[in-house]
Length: 111
Length: 118
Image 1 (cartoon, one colour):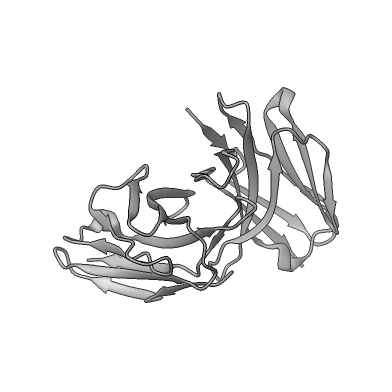
Image 2 (cartoon, each protein chain N blue to C red):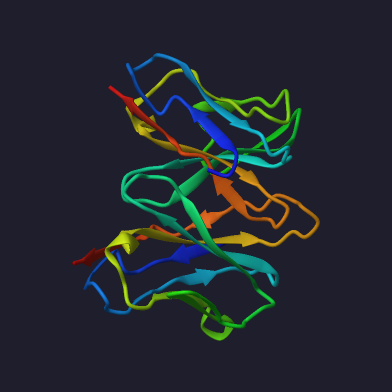
């Protein structure tokens, strides 16, 4: 998975709970992205970062927060989990050829 | 606004058949990238190809080939002599080409599920 690690692989949350999805890279790339994939759909961008300390919203940021204190880590935070956030979450890094490479994903279910 | 359309939701073929996956895109940008990714049943996303909007040459990689036509805003993907291992969801994606390492936010199509029967 191109040097991108995501934890956990699976998680079940109750409505209203919070959690952090972890994403770590060992490629020293500045650009990192968070996407969500709903069943039968393509991926949609949640947040992205162009480097440590710099983040910005994507297409579907509501209900999520991010931080980027180091080049290696780009965690995604869910503060009050809702059933609509049931999805598979992918973290991606952008290499020198402007191509994004994805982590293995985190499958999240909110009940 | 940018948009990617993959009209074929599911395709089923028998092994050794050729199959073409269609991708039509919309963008106002003059420079952009087009991508194909493969998502096998295990769920990971595997990069297959990136095409620059300035490069309309078709590309072949083994049994895979790609036909990029700016005149019809299409970037179709053909698998020759399909195999069971080709069974996956295939995504076409589009991004603005900001040269110099700027962000390239991907716009994905909804994917085409390819089932190759033995």
